[in-house]
Length: 262
Image (cartoon, rainbow, N blue to C red; front, side, top):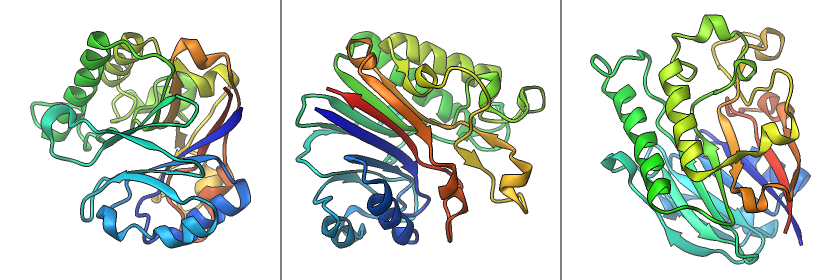
């Protein structure tokens, strides 16, 4: 059975409920993974989602910060969450889909502004978070699994508008890219978006600071869909819904899609 998956850093699910509903109505993915929900679970506006057929939700939340949620048309089995780097943040949740796939939704720490853990605690937390993800998959090899989310790292040179200018900017520094690659290798993860779209500039985030984000087009690919090798060949149809960055009261991230024939 084919199913379509979407991941989106929504930057407040309550503030941006209208564009979540717009996405669900117009694009109708089978599963939608949200990050940076910025809401306690009990205050996530589920009624509108359920009215569109998304009556199943598994989420972790906290007031004003972080938060992850998985919305689905079909039942989800809650597989729990992990507090990587012991931050006490709502940054991860895992479910099992009806087709047996394990799906994990992540919001990896952004890392602050200075790429030096000696002067910026948040950067150290980001590296530690990814290291613990790496160690987790080294100890427990994943099978029939998909991980998605805002990883807050653009790993490839063509995942940013200027590789040279962003080498010392958090999200594209060599140490972050190296940590992410080690984590990817530990789980044998396949970058589905780049499997489907192997060449060319590709972004999923554009800063609010740009007066005309589309014309400037200074983007980064921070949002990812990865799968284990046993199901990666079933993936297709990857795309970034760039237009959503221009919707009313948008997130600074655009939704990323992939389909799987499983």
